[in-house]
Image 1: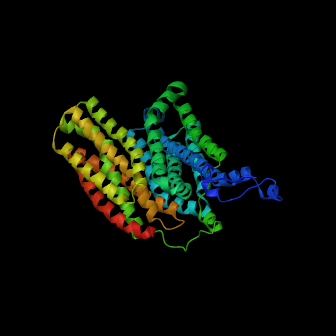
Image 2 (image 1 turned 90 degrees about the vertical axis):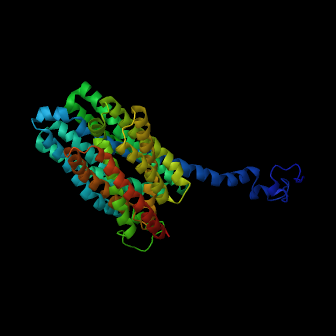
Amino acid sequence: MRRYSWTNNRWPLFSCLYFDPALPGFEATGSWDDMVDILAAPQQAKDTRSDSALRTLGAISVAHWVSHFHIFVLPMLFPFLKTRLGVGYIELGFALTVFGAVSGLTQAPIGYLADHIGARKVLLIGLTVGGAALIGLGLHLSYTSLIVCAALLGLANSVYHPCDYAILSTHMDEARMGRAFSIHTFAGFLGGAVAPAIMAALVAWLGGLGALIVAGAVGPAAALGLLAVGIPDASSADRKQDGADAPKQSVITPAIIMLTIFFMLLGLSNAGIGNFGVVALMTGYGVAFSAANIALTAFLGAGAAGVLAGGYLADRTSRHGQVAAACFGINAVVMLVIATTTLPSAVLTAAMGIAGFLGGVIAPSRDMLVRNAAPPGAAGRAFGIVSTGFNFSGILSPLLFGWIMDQNMPHWVFGASVAFMVLTVLLALVTDRKAAPAKA
């Protein structure tokens, strides 16, 4: 029989306990192995939850990668489609207009549907429908089929933001939510970045029709992968079963309305640079084509890196509106310098890189603002509604910045972006104030 003293016991917490294997009943009450198992159980449960969250994040990020990849499939095949269909770029551009209009009009209804029947079901359907649309176009190519394909792709595209963010908001660790949002956003950036190279390789290998079919098959394949991983659901019914249901309240709150406008201003401030930045630099500042493209590449590439950095920042602060305001305030100054002066190529590239990086940093804080403003059980609806702001900017920006270029005012491509950034700064501070009471 022995006692564990304070000096030689490796577990001081249990030094006051007395154990004797010879005592009757000791076998029944347990042993050191049993105690170790009991103490290890919480850690094992924590590890299991962590593994499940990691699998969920990876699966949802793959879905977001597919969404951005599919967005670029048709534009990358415009030369092939123009030749095979015998149409002009106006007709092809109309297909993209249909895509944007359908996506914008269906974002909010899809958010309601995701909260009602479950985000997982809606996401899997969206992946399948988007892929089937491209496969159908590859099997039966006509201009009518192109418009139908664009409409179905727009419908499928409206699924991703409401469903992805609803699942992530429900199942990610609160302390790592910003990083989860940043990885999800980065995956989307990556899907768009690699789409041109993938489609070029597919066209060279299989031709235009084969490229459409293979690109479409990515959607159902991803849906099967998500099923195999077993991604969790996120719906109002699930929360009721968990006993965490909250009183119903309208999702159309002042904070959500302000955030929708905020998303639209974000889209407008970046769309002019992304779509018309190269031609504006060439015509208004005498920048060579290669140098202008390098500057734009720095803007887009640094933006992807900024998203990942912004995730860590979003997890370390609750002042997400102030983060967005500070980053876009600096961006406004940088863009004002670009708009009003002719910079050497190296300085221009560095300035565009800084602007892109700060623009990326904003993305996770932007998403956290929406999550904080969403009523309980309404993440899908909230993200569906505010994401229409991006769709509105996608409709407005080509008209606005195209008109600016037609008026031979290339400097105002950057000048208008500065104006939208200033408005974004002011609105970010307002939405931060409104989102805090909503979270409380």
